[in-house]
Image (cartoon, rainbow, N blue to C red; front, top):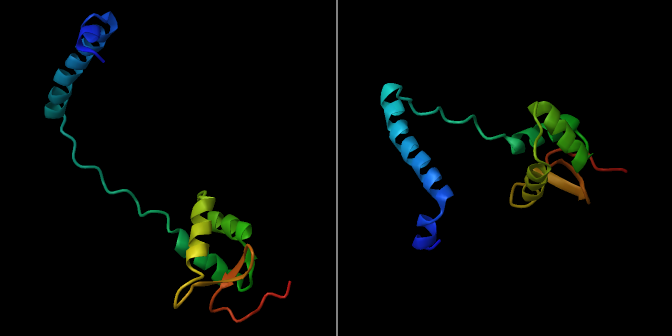
Length: 118
């Protein structure tokens, strides 16, 4: 914004005066009632561990949507579908994969020796 335009804007003057008052008030409040640092947030939702637990307990191949629903139930909160898909997709590859992709959208725990018959 051009400086000329800002000075001639009556609304900007009101907002700037409020901002100045707030700038003076906040340090006073901080001195009167200092706050300590906030505690660290709880551990990020352990999606991979929850998905692993679901497939271990199942003992047989499951559809990705069923895995998501069971993981949400175990976690006691809604897990992002995207996070569950990512946990499944990234852990079917590598030297020691956690999961085995039986076919499109169906996974099982990698150490489970049963095969999908459906």
